[in-house]
Length: 473
Image (cartoon, rainbow, N blue to C red; front, side, top):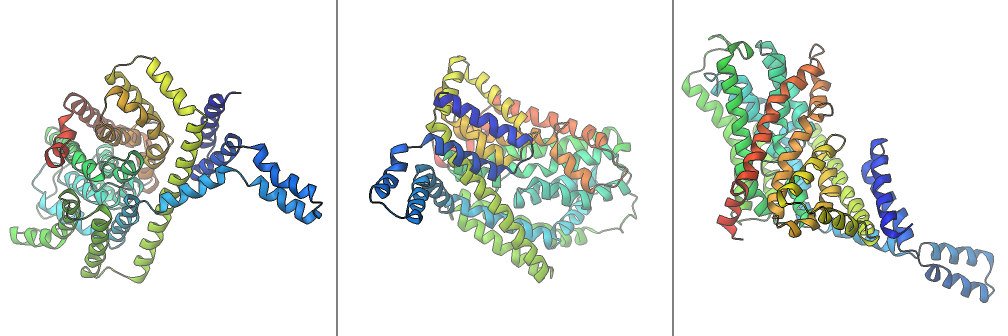
Protein backbone atom coordinates (compact mmCIF):
# COMPACT_ATOMS: atom_id res chain seq x y z
CA UNK A 1 0.00 0.00 0.00
CA UNK A 2 1.14 3.54 -0.72
CA UNK A 3 1.35 6.10 2.06
CA UNK A 4 -1.85 7.95 0.97
CA UNK A 5 -3.71 4.64 0.94
CA UNK A 6 -2.47 3.96 4.47
CA UNK A 7 -3.72 7.44 5.48
CA UNK A 8 -7.19 6.72 4.07
CA UNK A 9 -7.21 3.35 5.87
CA UNK A 10 -6.24 5.17 9.05
CA UNK A 11 -9.20 7.54 8.73
CA UNK A 12 -11.61 4.73 7.85
CA UNK A 13 -10.49 2.58 10.78
CA UNK A 14 -10.92 5.55 13.12
CA UNK A 15 -14.50 6.11 11.94
CA UNK A 16 -15.24 2.41 12.41
CA UNK A 17 -13.93 2.54 15.99
CA UNK A 18 -16.13 5.56 16.70
CA UNK A 19 -19.26 3.78 15.52
CA UNK A 20 -18.30 0.75 17.61
CA UNK A 21 -18.30 2.97 20.69
CA UNK A 22 -14.60 3.25 21.54
CA UNK A 23 -13.55 6.35 23.56
CA UNK A 24 -12.71 8.97 20.95
CA UNK A 25 -9.72 10.74 22.51
CA UNK A 26 -7.89 7.50 23.38
CA UNK A 27 -8.75 5.99 20.00
CA UNK A 28 -7.23 9.04 18.33
CA UNK A 29 -4.04 8.72 20.33
CA UNK A 30 -3.78 4.97 19.74
CA UNK A 31 -4.33 5.36 15.98
CA UNK A 32 -1.85 8.22 15.81
CA UNK A 33 0.88 6.28 17.60
CA UNK A 34 0.24 3.02 15.70
CA UNK A 35 0.17 4.52 12.21
CA UNK A 36 2.77 7.13 13.16
CA UNK A 37 5.19 4.38 14.14
CA UNK A 38 4.76 2.94 10.65
CA UNK A 39 5.07 6.37 9.00
CA UNK A 40 8.25 7.36 10.83
CA UNK A 41 9.78 3.89 11.07
CA UNK A 42 13.53 3.88 10.37
CA UNK A 43 15.06 0.41 10.59
CA UNK A 44 18.60 1.76 10.62
CA UNK A 45 17.79 4.12 13.47
CA UNK A 46 16.21 1.28 15.41
CA UNK A 47 18.93 -1.36 14.99
CA UNK A 48 22.08 0.75 14.94
CA UNK A 49 22.57 0.81 18.71
CA UNK A 50 21.59 -2.84 19.04
CA UNK A 51 24.15 -3.96 16.46
CA UNK A 52 26.87 -2.00 18.27
CA UNK A 53 25.94 -3.72 21.52
CA UNK A 54 26.12 -7.14 19.82
CA UNK A 55 29.55 -6.29 18.38
CA UNK A 56 30.73 -5.33 21.87
CA UNK A 57 29.44 -8.70 23.16
CA UNK A 58 27.16 -7.07 25.74
CA UNK A 59 25.31 -9.25 28.25
CA UNK A 60 21.71 -10.34 27.72
CA UNK A 61 20.18 -7.67 29.98
CA UNK A 62 22.08 -4.92 28.16
CA UNK A 63 21.00 -6.33 24.79
CA UNK A 64 17.36 -6.35 25.83
CA UNK A 65 17.66 -2.81 27.21
CA UNK A 66 19.30 -1.63 23.98
CA UNK A 67 16.62 -3.29 21.87
CA UNK A 68 13.89 -1.73 24.01
CA UNK A 69 15.44 1.73 23.63
CA UNK A 70 15.78 1.19 19.89
CA UNK A 71 12.13 0.18 19.63
CA UNK A 72 11.06 3.49 21.15
CA UNK A 73 13.58 5.44 19.10
CA UNK A 74 10.86 6.62 16.74
CA UNK A 75 9.85 10.20 15.96
CA UNK A 76 6.17 9.52 16.68
CA UNK A 77 6.90 9.53 20.41
CA UNK A 78 8.72 12.85 20.13
CA UNK A 79 5.78 14.22 18.15
CA UNK A 80 3.28 12.99 20.73
CA UNK A 81 5.19 14.65 23.59
CA UNK A 82 5.58 17.91 21.67
CA UNK A 83 1.87 18.01 20.78
CA UNK A 84 0.94 17.42 24.42
CA UNK A 85 3.14 20.30 25.51
CA UNK A 86 1.73 22.55 22.76
CA UNK A 87 -1.82 21.93 23.93
CA UNK A 88 -1.01 22.57 27.57
CA UNK A 89 0.85 25.78 26.67
CA UNK A 90 -1.89 27.14 24.39
CA UNK A 91 -3.05 30.48 25.79
CA UNK A 92 -6.43 30.33 24.04
CA UNK A 93 -7.33 27.00 25.62
CA UNK A 94 -6.65 28.39 29.09
CA UNK A 95 -10.03 30.11 28.86
CA UNK A 96 -11.89 26.81 28.50
CA UNK A 97 -11.69 25.55 32.13
CA UNK A 98 -12.35 29.06 33.45
CA UNK A 99 -15.53 29.52 31.41
CA UNK A 100 -16.59 25.98 32.29
CA UNK A 101 -16.10 26.68 35.98
CA UNK A 102 -18.20 29.84 35.70
CA UNK A 103 -21.00 27.85 34.09
CA UNK A 104 -20.89 24.94 36.50
CA UNK A 105 -20.86 27.15 39.59
CA UNK A 106 -23.83 29.09 38.20
CA UNK A 107 -25.65 25.81 37.60
CA UNK A 108 -24.86 24.29 40.98
CA UNK A 109 -25.77 27.47 42.91
CA UNK A 110 -29.41 27.42 41.69
CA UNK A 111 -28.96 30.77 39.99
CA UNK A 112 -30.67 29.40 36.88
CA UNK A 113 -33.78 28.54 38.89
CA UNK A 114 -34.03 32.13 40.12
CA UNK A 115 -33.44 33.39 36.59
CA UNK A 116 -36.21 31.28 35.06
CA UNK A 117 -38.76 32.26 37.71
CA UNK A 118 -37.93 35.94 37.29
CA UNK A 119 -38.08 35.93 33.50
CA UNK A 120 -41.39 34.08 33.60
CA UNK A 121 -42.92 36.71 35.88
CA UNK A 122 -41.52 39.51 33.72
CA UNK A 123 -42.93 37.97 30.50
CA UNK A 124 -46.34 36.94 31.89
CA UNK A 125 -48.30 39.18 29.52
CA UNK A 126 -46.74 37.66 26.39
CA UNK A 127 -48.31 34.68 24.62
CA UNK A 128 -46.32 31.59 25.58
CA UNK A 129 -44.68 33.49 28.44
CA UNK A 130 -43.21 30.41 30.10
CA UNK A 131 -41.70 29.21 26.81
CA UNK A 132 -40.23 32.66 26.20
CA UNK A 133 -38.74 32.63 29.70
CA UNK A 134 -37.34 29.14 29.09
CA UNK A 135 -35.69 30.26 25.83
CA UNK A 136 -34.19 33.35 27.44
CA UNK A 137 -32.91 31.30 30.37
CA UNK A 138 -31.47 28.69 28.01
CA UNK A 139 -29.70 31.41 26.03
CA UNK A 140 -28.13 33.00 29.12
CA UNK A 141 -27.21 29.72 30.77
CA UNK A 142 -25.90 28.29 27.51
CA UNK A 143 -23.56 31.25 27.05
CA UNK A 144 -22.17 30.57 30.50
CA UNK A 145 -21.52 26.85 29.98
CA UNK A 146 -21.50 25.98 26.29
CA UNK A 147 -22.20 22.34 27.22
CA UNK A 148 -25.41 21.30 25.48
CA UNK A 149 -26.05 18.25 27.64
CA UNK A 150 -25.83 20.29 30.85
CA UNK A 151 -28.20 23.02 29.61
CA UNK A 152 -30.83 20.67 28.18
CA UNK A 153 -30.71 18.40 31.23
CA UNK A 154 -31.03 21.21 33.76
CA UNK A 155 -33.79 23.02 31.85
CA UNK A 156 -35.53 19.67 31.33
CA UNK A 157 -35.65 19.25 35.10
CA UNK A 158 -36.56 22.89 35.77
CA UNK A 159 -38.69 24.33 32.97
CA UNK A 160 -40.29 21.32 31.27
CA UNK A 161 -42.29 20.14 34.33
CA UNK A 162 -43.41 23.74 34.94
CA UNK A 163 -44.67 24.08 31.37
CA UNK A 164 -46.42 20.71 31.48
CA UNK A 165 -48.15 21.67 34.74
CA UNK A 166 -49.33 24.84 32.99
CA UNK A 167 -50.97 22.62 30.32
CA UNK A 168 -48.46 23.47 27.59
CA UNK A 169 -48.43 21.13 24.60
CA UNK A 170 -45.83 18.44 25.23
CA UNK A 171 -44.16 18.70 21.80
CA UNK A 172 -44.15 22.49 21.90
CA UNK A 173 -42.54 22.60 25.36
CA UNK A 174 -39.99 19.91 24.47
CA UNK A 175 -38.93 21.71 21.30
CA UNK A 176 -38.34 24.92 23.25
CA UNK A 177 -35.99 23.18 25.71
CA UNK A 178 -34.03 21.28 23.04
CA UNK A 179 -33.59 24.28 20.74
CA UNK A 180 -32.76 26.73 23.51
CA UNK A 181 -30.19 24.37 24.99
CA UNK A 182 -28.16 24.38 21.76
CA UNK A 183 -27.75 28.18 21.59
CA UNK A 184 -24.60 28.11 23.71
CA UNK A 185 -22.44 26.73 20.90
CA UNK A 186 -23.11 29.92 18.91
CA UNK A 187 -23.77 32.84 21.27
CA UNK A 188 -20.53 34.23 22.84
CA UNK A 189 -18.76 33.55 25.09
CA UNK A 190 -19.04 30.14 23.43
CA UNK A 191 -16.65 27.33 24.36
CA UNK A 192 -17.06 25.95 20.84
CA UNK A 193 -15.75 29.15 19.30
CA UNK A 194 -12.70 29.05 21.60
CA UNK A 195 -11.94 25.52 20.43
CA UNK A 196 -12.45 26.51 16.78
CA UNK A 197 -10.12 29.48 17.27
CA UNK A 198 -7.40 27.19 18.64
CA UNK A 199 -7.92 24.79 15.74
CA UNK A 200 -8.04 27.32 12.90
CA UNK A 201 -5.76 30.08 14.26
CA UNK A 202 -8.60 32.58 13.76
CA UNK A 203 -8.74 35.36 16.36
CA UNK A 204 -11.20 34.43 19.10
CA UNK A 205 -12.05 38.11 19.49
CA UNK A 206 -13.10 38.32 15.84
CA UNK A 207 -15.02 35.06 16.14
CA UNK A 208 -16.96 36.40 19.11
CA UNK A 209 -17.74 39.59 17.21
CA UNK A 210 -18.80 37.57 14.16
CA UNK A 211 -21.10 35.31 16.19
CA UNK A 212 -22.97 38.10 17.95
CA UNK A 213 -25.49 39.01 15.24
CA UNK A 214 -26.11 35.41 14.00
CA UNK A 215 -26.53 34.20 17.58
CA UNK A 216 -29.08 36.81 18.58
CA UNK A 217 -30.74 36.52 15.16
CA UNK A 218 -31.38 32.82 15.78
CA UNK A 219 -32.54 33.40 19.36
CA UNK A 220 -34.82 36.16 18.07
CA UNK A 221 -36.32 33.87 15.43
CA UNK A 222 -37.01 31.30 18.15
CA UNK A 223 -38.77 33.95 20.25
CA UNK A 224 -40.84 35.18 17.30
CA UNK A 225 -41.90 31.65 16.48
CA UNK A 226 -42.88 30.86 20.07
CA UNK A 227 -44.88 34.06 20.58
CA UNK A 228 -46.50 33.84 17.15
CA UNK A 229 -47.42 30.19 17.50
CA UNK A 230 -48.86 30.71 20.99
CA UNK A 231 -50.84 33.73 19.76
CA UNK A 232 -52.30 31.84 16.80
CA UNK A 233 -53.04 28.71 18.83
CA UNK A 234 -53.48 29.55 22.54
CA UNK A 235 -54.15 25.89 23.34
CA UNK A 236 -50.44 25.17 22.81
CA UNK A 237 -49.43 27.55 25.61
CA UNK A 238 -52.40 28.57 27.78
CA UNK A 239 -52.14 31.82 29.69
CA UNK A 240 -51.92 31.32 33.45
CA UNK A 241 -54.83 32.49 35.62
CA UNK A 242 -54.45 35.90 37.20
CA UNK A 243 -53.87 34.49 40.67
CA UNK A 244 -51.29 31.92 39.54
CA UNK A 245 -48.21 32.24 41.76
CA UNK A 246 -49.67 35.42 43.18
CA UNK A 247 -50.04 38.87 41.66
CA UNK A 248 -46.79 40.77 41.22
CA UNK A 249 -46.70 44.54 41.11
CA UNK A 250 -44.36 46.42 38.81
CA UNK A 251 -42.08 47.16 41.74
CA UNK A 252 -41.88 43.51 42.73
CA UNK A 253 -41.06 42.47 39.17
CA UNK A 254 -38.38 45.16 38.97
CA UNK A 255 -36.89 43.96 42.27
CA UNK A 256 -36.84 40.37 41.02
CA UNK A 257 -35.07 41.46 37.84
CA UNK A 258 -32.51 43.45 39.81
CA UNK A 259 -31.72 40.57 42.15
CA UNK A 260 -31.85 37.67 39.66
CA UNK A 261 -31.58 38.70 36.01
CA UNK A 262 -29.28 41.70 35.98
CA UNK A 263 -26.42 40.25 38.09
CA UNK A 264 -25.91 37.31 35.73
CA UNK A 265 -26.53 39.46 32.65
CA UNK A 266 -24.00 42.05 33.81
CA UNK A 267 -21.46 39.32 34.54
CA UNK A 268 -21.81 37.80 31.04
CA UNK A 269 -21.83 41.17 29.28
CA UNK A 270 -18.79 42.35 31.27
CA UNK A 271 -16.82 39.26 30.34
CA UNK A 272 -17.85 39.49 26.70
CA UNK A 273 -17.34 43.25 26.49
CA UNK A 274 -13.86 43.01 27.98
CA UNK A 275 -12.91 40.56 25.23
CA UNK A 276 -14.55 42.40 22.31
CA UNK A 277 -13.17 45.82 23.23
CA UNK A 278 -9.67 44.53 23.91
CA UNK A 279 -9.71 45.31 27.62
CA UNK A 280 -8.70 41.75 28.51
CA UNK A 281 -7.60 38.55 26.83
CA UNK A 282 -10.11 35.67 26.75
CA UNK A 283 -8.23 33.96 29.58
CA UNK A 284 -8.25 37.12 31.74
CA UNK A 285 -11.93 37.74 31.03
CA UNK A 286 -12.76 34.10 31.81
CA UNK A 287 -10.92 34.46 35.13
CA UNK A 288 -13.12 37.42 35.98
CA UNK A 289 -16.16 35.40 34.95
CA UNK A 290 -15.19 32.50 37.20
CA UNK A 291 -14.63 34.86 40.12
CA UNK A 292 -17.92 36.61 39.36
CA UNK A 293 -19.75 33.26 39.38
CA UNK A 294 -18.32 32.50 42.81
CA UNK A 295 -19.34 35.92 44.10
CA UNK A 296 -22.89 35.52 42.74
CA UNK A 297 -23.21 32.13 44.40
CA UNK A 298 -21.93 33.58 47.67
CA UNK A 299 -24.33 36.55 47.47
CA UNK A 300 -27.26 34.17 46.94
CA UNK A 301 -26.01 32.10 49.90
CA UNK A 302 -25.82 29.08 47.63
CA UNK A 303 -22.07 28.49 47.75
CA UNK A 304 -21.44 25.33 49.74
CA UNK A 305 -18.37 23.14 49.92
CA UNK A 306 -20.22 20.29 48.19
CA UNK A 307 -21.32 22.49 45.27
CA UNK A 308 -17.86 23.97 44.92
CA UNK A 309 -16.31 20.50 44.89
CA UNK A 310 -18.77 19.28 42.25
CA UNK A 311 -18.09 22.34 40.08
CA UNK A 312 -14.33 21.85 40.26
CA UNK A 313 -14.65 18.13 39.48
CA UNK A 314 -16.90 18.71 36.45
CA UNK A 315 -14.61 21.47 35.20
CA UNK A 316 -11.52 19.29 35.44
CA UNK A 317 -13.25 16.32 33.80
CA UNK A 318 -14.57 18.33 30.83
CA UNK A 319 -11.33 20.29 30.40
CA UNK A 320 -9.30 17.08 30.42
CA UNK A 321 -11.55 15.64 27.73
CA UNK A 322 -11.06 18.71 25.50
CA UNK A 323 -7.29 18.82 26.05
CA UNK A 324 -6.75 15.12 25.35
CA UNK A 325 -8.93 15.43 22.27
CA UNK A 326 -6.60 18.17 21.08
CA UNK A 327 -3.51 16.08 21.82
CA UNK A 328 -4.91 13.07 19.99
CA UNK A 329 -6.33 15.00 17.05
CA UNK A 330 -3.22 17.12 16.44
CA UNK A 331 -0.99 14.03 16.55
CA UNK A 332 -3.47 12.14 14.36
CA UNK A 333 -3.68 14.97 11.82
CA UNK A 334 0.13 15.33 11.74
CA UNK A 335 0.54 11.65 10.89
CA UNK A 336 -2.38 11.79 8.43
CA UNK A 337 -0.80 14.76 6.67
CA UNK A 338 2.69 13.19 6.69
CA UNK A 339 1.30 10.09 4.96
CA UNK A 340 -0.26 12.30 2.28
CA UNK A 341 -3.89 11.92 3.32
CA UNK A 342 -4.55 15.66 3.52
CA UNK A 343 -3.03 16.20 0.07
CA UNK A 344 -5.09 13.33 -1.34
CA UNK A 345 -8.36 14.81 -0.01
CA UNK A 346 -7.41 18.28 -1.25
CA UNK A 347 -6.68 16.96 -4.74
CA UNK A 348 -9.96 15.03 -4.79
CA UNK A 349 -12.09 18.01 -3.71
CA UNK A 350 -10.31 20.46 -6.02
CA UNK A 351 -10.66 17.95 -8.87
CA UNK A 352 -14.45 18.09 -8.47
CA UNK A 353 -14.24 21.67 -9.76
CA UNK A 354 -16.85 22.90 -7.29
CA UNK A 355 -17.93 26.49 -6.95
CA UNK A 356 -17.40 28.09 -3.52
CA UNK A 357 -21.12 27.76 -2.77
CA UNK A 358 -21.18 24.07 -3.68
CA UNK A 359 -18.06 23.46 -1.60
CA UNK A 360 -19.70 25.16 1.38
CA UNK A 361 -22.83 23.07 0.91
CA UNK A 362 -20.79 19.85 0.67
CA UNK A 363 -18.71 20.70 3.76
CA UNK A 364 -21.77 21.67 5.79
CA UNK A 365 -23.61 18.52 4.74
CA UNK A 366 -20.71 16.33 5.87
CA UNK A 367 -20.50 18.18 9.20
CA UNK A 368 -24.28 17.83 9.55
CA UNK A 369 -23.99 14.05 9.16
CA UNK A 370 -21.06 13.85 11.57
CA UNK A 371 -23.15 15.65 14.16
CA UNK A 372 -25.38 12.60 14.56
CA UNK A 373 -22.87 10.27 16.23
CA UNK A 374 -20.38 12.89 17.50
CA UNK A 375 -20.29 15.80 19.93
CA UNK A 376 -19.35 19.25 18.65
CA UNK A 377 -15.93 19.03 20.30
CA UNK A 378 -14.91 15.97 18.25
CA UNK A 379 -16.20 17.54 15.03
CA UNK A 380 -14.34 20.82 15.56
CA UNK A 381 -11.08 19.26 16.72
CA UNK A 382 -10.91 16.25 14.40
CA UNK A 383 -12.84 16.85 11.18
CA UNK A 384 -13.03 20.61 10.64
CA UNK A 385 -9.21 20.79 10.18
CA UNK A 386 -9.65 18.61 7.08
CA UNK A 387 -11.64 21.43 5.43
CA UNK A 388 -9.55 24.36 6.67
CA UNK A 389 -6.65 23.97 4.15
CA UNK A 390 -9.19 24.04 1.31
CA UNK A 391 -10.72 27.38 2.29
CA UNK A 392 -8.08 29.60 0.60
CA UNK A 393 -8.56 27.74 -2.71
CA UNK A 394 -12.27 28.57 -2.68
CA UNK A 395 -11.76 32.08 -1.30
CA UNK A 396 -13.75 31.43 1.88
CA UNK A 397 -13.04 33.37 5.06
CA UNK A 398 -12.30 30.88 7.89
CA UNK A 399 -14.16 33.18 10.29
CA UNK A 400 -17.28 33.01 8.12
CA UNK A 401 -16.83 29.24 7.82
CA UNK A 402 -16.61 28.90 11.61
CA UNK A 403 -19.89 30.76 12.17
CA UNK A 404 -21.59 28.56 9.58
CA UNK A 405 -20.27 25.46 11.35
CA UNK A 406 -21.58 26.75 14.69
CA UNK A 407 -25.04 27.21 13.16
CA UNK A 408 -24.86 23.86 11.41
CA UNK A 409 -23.96 21.93 14.55
CA UNK A 410 -27.23 23.01 16.12
CA UNK A 411 -29.13 21.22 13.36
CA UNK A 412 -27.10 18.10 14.07
CA UNK A 413 -28.21 18.10 17.69
CA UNK A 414 -31.86 18.59 16.74
CA UNK A 415 -32.31 16.33 13.69
CA UNK A 416 -33.94 12.91 14.20
CA UNK A 417 -33.16 10.07 14.52
CA UNK A 418 -29.87 10.95 16.24
CA UNK A 419 -30.87 14.29 17.82
CA UNK A 420 -28.71 14.18 20.94
CA UNK A 421 -30.51 17.07 22.64
CA UNK A 422 -33.76 15.09 22.36
CA UNK A 423 -32.14 12.10 24.07
CA UNK A 424 -30.73 14.36 26.80
CA UNK A 425 -34.25 15.69 27.42
CA UNK A 426 -35.87 12.26 27.28
CA UNK A 427 -33.49 11.09 29.99
CA UNK A 428 -34.90 13.59 32.52
CA UNK A 429 -38.44 14.13 31.20
CA UNK A 430 -41.53 12.65 32.90
CA UNK A 431 -42.26 9.08 31.76
CA UNK A 432 -45.31 10.05 29.69
CA UNK A 433 -43.20 12.30 27.41
CA UNK A 434 -42.46 10.21 24.32
CA UNK A 435 -39.38 10.54 22.15
CA UNK A 436 -41.53 11.04 19.04
CA UNK A 437 -43.25 13.98 20.75
CA UNK A 438 -39.85 15.56 21.35
CA UNK A 439 -38.81 14.95 17.73
CA UNK A 440 -42.06 16.56 16.56
CA UNK A 441 -41.41 19.59 18.76
CA UNK A 442 -37.91 20.31 17.45
CA UNK A 443 -38.84 20.31 13.75
CA UNK A 444 -40.12 23.94 13.61
CA UNK A 445 -36.95 25.13 15.33
CA UNK A 446 -34.90 23.26 12.74
CA UNK A 447 -36.56 25.38 10.07
CA UNK A 448 -35.45 28.51 11.97
CA UNK A 449 -31.85 27.29 11.88
CA UNK A 450 -32.01 26.54 8.16
CA UNK A 451 -33.48 30.00 7.61
CA UNK A 452 -30.60 31.54 9.57
CA UNK A 453 -28.05 29.58 7.51
CA UNK A 454 -29.75 30.69 4.30
CA UNK A 455 -29.64 34.33 5.43
CA UNK A 456 -25.96 33.93 6.30
CA UNK A 457 -25.24 32.43 2.85
CA UNK A 458 -27.07 35.27 1.13
CA UNK A 459 -25.78 38.06 3.37
CA UNK A 460 -22.28 37.17 4.71
CA UNK A 461 -22.14 40.61 6.30
CA UNK A 462 -24.34 39.24 9.09
CA UNK A 463 -21.22 37.48 10.38
CA UNK A 464 -18.49 39.72 8.94
CA UNK A 465 -19.84 43.23 9.64
CA UNK A 466 -18.85 43.55 13.30
CA UNK A 467 -15.34 42.01 12.95
CA UNK A 468 -14.57 44.28 9.99
CA UNK A 469 -16.07 47.34 11.66
CA UNK A 470 -14.17 46.94 14.93
CA UNK A 471 -10.96 45.23 13.83
CA UNK A 472 -10.63 45.71 10.06
CA UNK A 473 -9.88 42.98 7.53
